[in-house]
Image 1: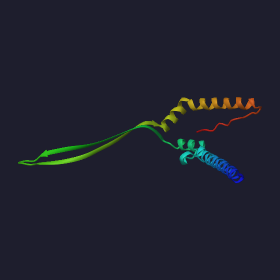
Image 2 (image 1 turned 90 degrees about the horizontal axis):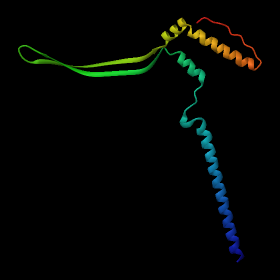
Image 3 (image 1 turned 135 degrees about the vertical axis):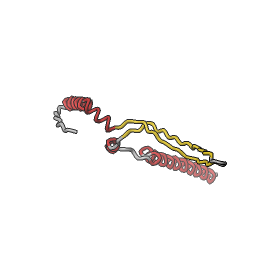
Image 4 (image 1 turned 180 degrees about the vertical axis):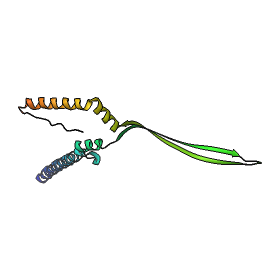
Length: 143
């Protein structure tokens, strides 16, 4: 009788050990998966702001709409006294609609929009730094 009770307790202990180890293994897998995919889901790297700003500054135009058209045109020319000559032409074109960023910048300079924006930014920064007990002076550079 003692042997039977001992084997049941031993079986319960093994089942409990298996359950706990399986739970720990699943928790480790979940933690690893979360830490790996939370920062770089599907292999996508986070973009840093300075590189994005630099790439935008290097743009010369901002194309918002692109139209592409392709047609096949057939021309038939009758020949004297009989017969004809036929030609198939493939005609294609592309139209880009957007903004020339160089023109926008020069227009903004001429209208004083950039100077006004710079003064507003300087005022906001001075106020923010003053709240922290600091002072700042800005130098003007010509564009």
